Image (cartoon, rainbow, N blue to C red; front, side):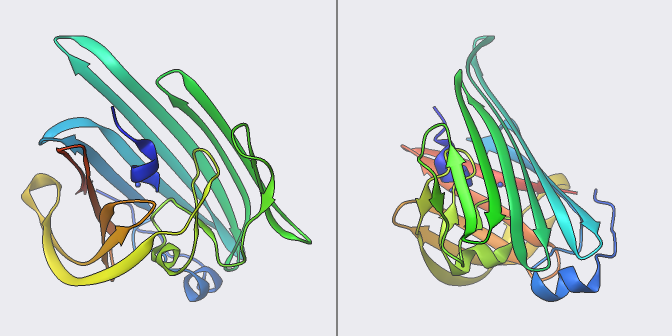
Length: 217
C-alpha cells in the first residue's frame, strides 16, 4: 500500500507570471510540473501540477493518479485532485477530493477574517496558522512552516534539514542539480528543489520499498 500522507505530507510550456506573483511566491519557471511515480523503478502513476497566472495571483491544480497491479489484478488505486487559489502571497481558497482505494476524502478551505479555515470529512474545522501552506510541494516556501495535508486536512509540522546540492535523475536520462531537504517527524521523506525549475524530486520508503518521483520534461 502507498501511504499518501507521506507523498503529500507531489516538456513544459513556459509562461511569464505576473510580477506580483513572482515577488511573493517561489514560483518555478515552468507552469507545468509532471512526475512519474516509481516503485522499485517501475511506474506506479503520475503527479502533475499546473500553475495558471491571473491578475494579482494564480491558481494551482494538482492531479495524482496511482494504480498498483499484480499479475494483471489492480490491488490498489488512488486519485487526488486539488485546487489552490492565491491572491498575492496568500492562499484564499483550497479544495480537494481524494479516493484512496475506496475511502473518500473531501477538503474545503476558505480565507475569511479569522484566517484560512480548513474543514474536511475527517477533521473538524480549524483556522490554519498564518504561515501554514498546502502540502502540494510546488512552492518551496512550504518548507518554512506547518503543512496543511491536502488529503485529510491535518496540520503537520515536519522538521526540515538542508542536505546540500545533489544531482538527481529525471525523465529521458536527464539530470538536475537541486537542493536536497530531508524531512523527519510526522513525515519521512526527501525533496529536491532547483532554483529555476522549482520542485524537482521526492523520495521516501514505504516499509523497505523505495518510492521515487522522477521529474518529466
